[in-house]
Image 1 (cartoon, chains in turn orange, yellow):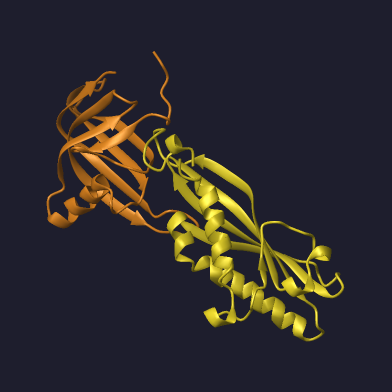
Image 2: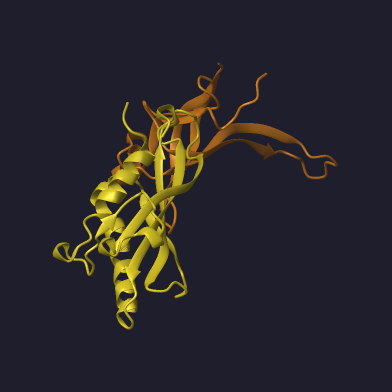
Length: 130
Length: 154
C-alpha cells in the first residue's frame, strides 16, 4: 500500500470542495456499555456505537462555498450536513452525513485568518477506495 | 503567458515609488526611481533623492493540503529599497525621516500592489550610520506575502 501525504487530500462539504485547507484529521471513536455485574472479577463490555469525529482548519476565504456553508449552517439554525467527505488522497475517502459541532474564526497578526471546523458523524459512514 | 507574480509585484512597486512627490501628498519629490543600482558615488546630484528598489530573497512553503488545490503555495518576497538623500547639515534628518515615511506610505497603501499580495510588512531600516560624507543612505526592507496555485508556477 502506498503511503499518503499532504500533497493529496481534501475536505468536501456536500457538493463543494473546500479551498485553502491547511490541516485536517479524522478520529474513529467507539462507544461501549459496561455491563459488568456486581461481584464479577472481570469487566464485561458491550460495544454500542461507532462515530467519526472530523476536524479541519483552513485559511479563511469567505467566498469559498464550502467554507461559507459551514458558517451559514450555524446562522441558519440547522447544523446538519447531508454529506461530508474526508479524502485521504485524490480518490479514496470516508463519507457520510454529519453534524457540525463547532466553527471558529480566529485572527492574528502576521498570518491568515483561520477557520476551524469540527463535526461528528451521523448514521452509517462508508469508505470508498482509490 | 502572463508575467510571474513576482514580476508583477516589482512592476507595482516601481510604479508606486514613482508617485512619491509633494503634489501627490508626500513630503519628498523623488527624482529617480531605478532598479539599476549605480552606487551612491555615481548617483548624480540632480537624481537625488533617489530610490533603488530590488526584489531579493524569497521563501516559499506549502500553503494548503493537496498540490494543485486552490492557493497551495505561500511565498514571502523581500523587497529592499535603497534610498539616498543629500546631507545638508540640520536638514539631513528631516529629509531622511520624510523619505522613510514616504516610501512606506507609497508601498503599504498602493491598491495595485495590495491586489497582488495578501499583506505588506515593513521590517527593517538599516542606515549608513552617518559615515558617508555629503549623503545619507539607507536600506528600507519590506516583506510581501502572496499565495498562488503551484500549477501556475507563481
